Structure formats: structure tokens, C-alpha cells
Length: 269
Picture (tube, rainbow, N blue to C red):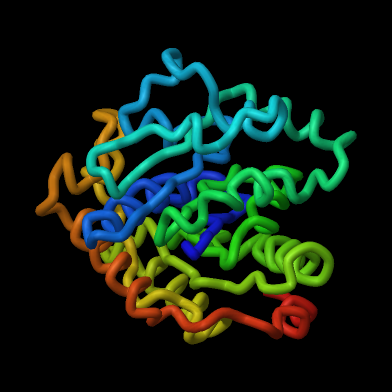
């Protein structure tokens, strides 16, 4: 059975989609079968992988609301090992439409349950919110990867995210674990980056990935060309660090998850 990882942080601009695209690509580059689910109404992962959103007949919205089978809308990407379930702006309406449905928190999980045996990893690019879509992502996932940018207020609001993870574990998905915390947008020319890294490691301890993603022009440019950074500039620092992250994830260096978040959340971030 494939491992389902939700990439989640309610703050925008922390590198969720960049991580989803490039981690997914490098896992497939290492001969793992990967399915990326674009679960963000902005559909940046879809366009960032070169898929024309205007030419997609069905997307993840139709799977949730219109009972289209997930396996029928999978898009093949650059290698047979890397595939995508696309998104669109229509997904914004799903937050409202799901409210009246039975088992609304389990819609994504039930939609992909027949796919997990086909992949080594299923990555879910979650929206920047803690609404019903994110709850669906966390309920469907085995673990959650949390990107945190190395900037001011980086840890602000994380207690709310960890609280949500706890609630999901207590009520919807008892097996949900923390895959790891990923530090992104590091600029080692500033003292701030070192301070944020130290603060994150002080709080999250061994749950922080050793790999740190730097600020990178190439990482910013690649989605505009519809490519993972490896296919845009494989020699760039951004490419090398995401390849290292994939290797670290495969080796399990981020730890085996967390079972005691209640105590830490109660103490605050």
C-alpha cells in the first residue's frame, strides 16, 4: 500500500506547491511510483507541471462532488512513475457543497482508496486554509509534511495547525502522524534564517528534516515553464536540495511520526 502524505500549512507562500511538485518528481526519479493530488483551488501544482487547466474535462472537484472516478482523471506527466490528479477553481465551491453530504470529511479518502495499491507515494497539495478541504486531506493521509518558511512570524499560527491535526487524530484518523517539518526559503546571508532554524529545531526537535530548502530563483522560475526544477535546471541548488529531501524521506530520517501533540500544543508554539 502506498503512503499518503498531506503537505499542509494554513499559511500561504511557504512552499507547499513547490515541495509537492519537486518532492514528487524526485521520488519518481528514484523509481518510486508517485501520484500528486492537486487539492488547492488555485491549481498551481496543475499549471506548474505544464498541464493546461483550460483543456481538462474533469478534475478533483468532480471526484468529490460529481462522483467521477479518480482513476479516470489521472494525468500522466514526464515519466510513467509520476502522475497527477488536477485541480481547478471549481474546487472553491466544494467547501460549501460538502457541508450537506454524509461523511463529508471522508470524501477524499473514499475516492482514492482504490488507488493506494498502485503507488508508493500519494502526495496531497493542500490549500492554505484549515477548512473542510484540508480536513479531508488530513483524514485521507497517513502523515503530514509541514513546510515552514525561514521568515518573520514563521511559527505563528502553527499551534492552530497542530490543534487541527490533533482533532483529526482524535475524531477522524487515529493513525495520522507527522512526517516531518520542512524549512523552506532559507537565506543564509541573514541572521534571521539561522534564528528561525534554531527556533524550529528547538520546538520540533528531531521532527525537522535535515534538508533545508534555500531561496532559489530557479525554483521560482520553473513553474512558469511547467516543469519541476530538475527539468529546468538540474544543477541548481534548489534541485539538489529537493533531491536530497527525497532521499531523506526515503531513509526515514524525519522520524516515525508524533503521538503526543496535545501536550506540546497546550504549551503553545
